[in-house]
Image (cartoon, rainbow, N blue to C red; front, side, top):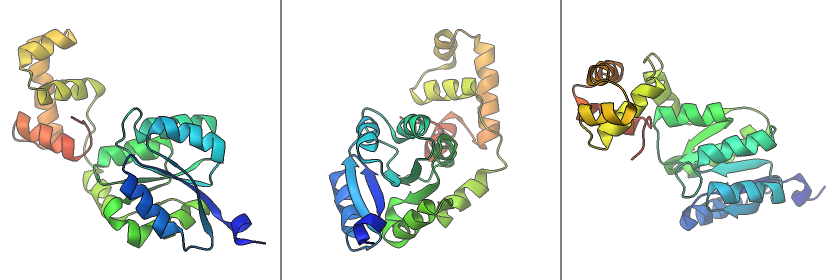
Length: 210
């Protein structure tokens, strides 16, 4: 059997050309791998998946037009057997949970790609899950935290946008007292001292995005 027939077929999805080039350079010498396609956003990824039918997708999360998580959901809806590795610079635990819930089997930090990516590709191709120790530690650190409700996240997004309680209440059609109650709950759940601290914590953990 030729290497080509035995190769793990890989699709890279990232909006940064240099990242795609770096991954291509890394995969190139590997006898058991072949790069079969590239995409620069989630919409392209769906089209390319249909064309190439790769064995493993390397998916960035933060991309224009359609983000990685929405692309994972769309691809897995159409192709439930799709094997997906998330590549990101972001270690936020909420992002990890969303990606894994959407169907990703692995999560590798971009700064660790040279050390961990090839093994992650082989592991996921074999049908197993894998995760950077750095990411696993982040999840473990937050595992006991109570999750924010969707309404609390709505309030937090408006706090991040600079809205005062009165304006938040008006936008969400709730009373100012309800807003205050939700803000208190947000601070408690995030272990934050004040609204600014809550926003920075939520951004760091990937609970909200600016």
